[in-house]
View 1 (cartoon, rainbow over the protein chains, first blue to last red):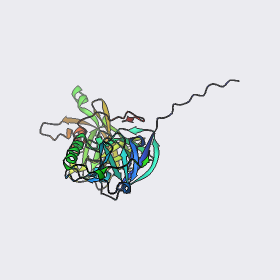
View 2 (view 1 turned 60 degrees about the vertical axis):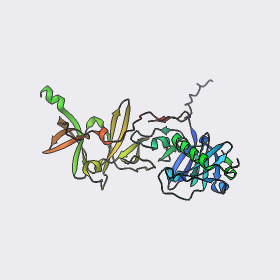
View 3 (view 1 turned 90 degrees about the vertical axis):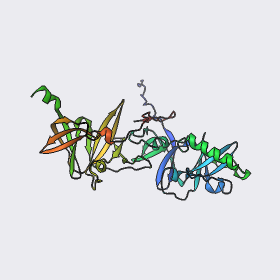
Length: 177
Length: 158
């Protein structure tokens, strides 16, 4: 006896994400966008201080290979109340290191909804969209949304004026993803 | 009924914001829903309070009461979910209202040049002259309407 071939529904496309906390809020980021997760302690002593009044979200930078990586405080970036950060995401294909309070969990999302058009300011650059997890709406951040090209240009100019000490170089040790 | 009267008579939904009543064209209304959890996340669009979830769709909540009446709503009785056609896209927005809504048919008087941008027309109902709202002027819209999509999966869908 032959059975008809079972029709298989196509698999929903999924994406692995990391839920992380900045101040009191939870955000998601694609795990593919995160190259390393480091404890703040592992960078102690090495970052160079940045003091640019127009960019309060960036207070430190460090050198990795040939690149200057700028540490963006996630809470300040999102306009939230600053809180003690414990981890740093080194973002893939980016010159941004993101200071966060902690990781909630890793999970998968099956659907990314566009940010409604009514949101019409910086958040359009901050987020790739919104996803619904456990009946909660979570913004999915864009790894390119933390520093604009203009901000990077400003920071590079500042760093070149200051000069980068050898101590600002950071090794490649960390929790790779 | 004359052709002119037929042309001018429109179905509208009356909504209450505090002490005042306003109207919206009925074809813009998707549904009237009970207040549900508002999800808030970091953003810089001050007109938007947060979002609600309706059948899997994320709908921004835009409280227009302060702009229209000068006072924020002290209680939200319902969300009037409206749609706005902007170019090729259809945007959804949830308007908190403080009382019952009513579907009426009324003759509309077009707004004049001296009227505020948020006034699309006027209607008269129960001895009251009521503004028919132009939601385009009341809800924020980005200058660049380019959909933000991502090359990887899953894709962003409105």
